[in-house]
Image (cartoon, rainbow, N blue to C red; front, side):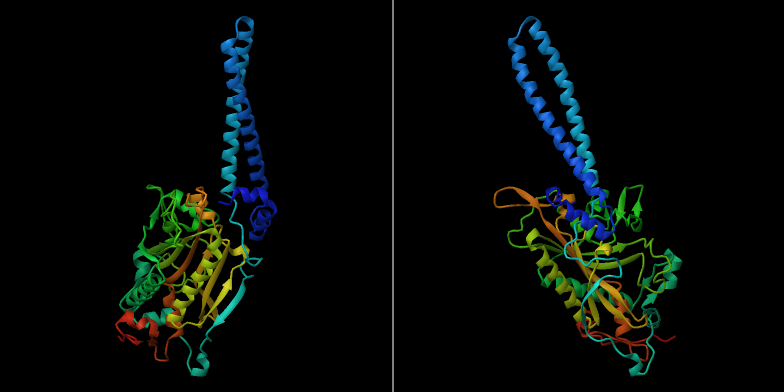
Length: 424
């Protein structure tokens, strides 16, 4: 939820943000109108209540016809007070409902849509497989040769976009996630195994029940949602609490299974494990002071890049355009690894600065020096997911179908240096 005071003071900034996102700028005027009606009704209510109290004293002292007239006026005032109170409540409800529809105000994001990102930098040069004298296999062909990925049995058991990771495939995923968690702990994050089912108010509070609500699995009988990221549970971890940030950001690293319906991706990435319904992820989540959020965002990006260095992948960093941001993010950076068999970049990590948007919706505050409270900022960033297997297999493959293990992952695989194809 955006800051109402900021909306009053700078409505044009919020309108421009809505336009840049492709959202409805008329919501800004609807919110301002509801706010004006609420404040006018409250002012009238307070004025009438003061008159009502004063008249109570007059009635006690009056007699005869004067008292009857005052009593009649008192009854009329009571009805007016109730009416103004109802008007204020209705306007407040309209204001609240409208504010929940307005996306976070963008902060520095490039203008445009999905294809209008800005490339911040490139790191490492993709391999030239033609110069090496062989045609690269895609991750599924490699994974099947290693007996690491089994899509057929995944589909048999659960349907399309499900899979089994077996043998070295399972070990490789655990290696990625354990490396990510070790890095997070070294950076001061508290490791957390999070729930994967959350209440509607938690899902709504994080901003995931907007335009992409159809991507989320819902258990109607239990009125619970399956999370697509541990960000959701971690955002709700301190809901309705006042937290202490005197010693710096409160940082958590969540490990969880993640579930996504991928309802809007029909026909996209149907081969292999690039776009699936279930996967695992280690997610960084930070609560910090609003004025520290931009610097914290850069720190999260730096930790993501450290992980990409650990697995020795060529990648680029992009600054996501406003029209491609989720409703909660004011700014987002993605790290995309090179996918040689598709000749394109594949998103492996993203990190978002949600400023105070989620915290306002979830009631997460800190106490300031003057004793008052204010909303904190929240940020999130991916450190490792199942999808990383795709980029690791394709970028580190060898001509015989084996795969070189990046040095950074070898300690997590018992010192294994090469993943060998399984014959037969």
